[in-house]
Image (cartoon, rainbow, N blue to C red; front, side, top):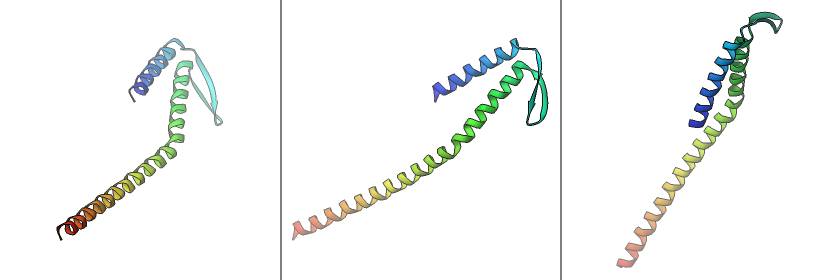
Length: 100
């Protein structure tokens, strides 16, 4: 997680430097609309849109893994409780058998 944070900060700093050194104005057609802006600004916006699309594409698998992890944890708790109950029953029955 720390590596991802450091990498994100580094990319952001590089994007700001890139934007500050590319000040020429260009026009870009996006879905039929013409957008004018500096090269640097449009590149930073494209980077942000790319990151957002990447996160949105990874979201379903992350949610699926989270649900699977919750199911496995719940099943583990059930098995541990059943195992402990089985050991308690076995000890109780052996104590009563040994005492007679």
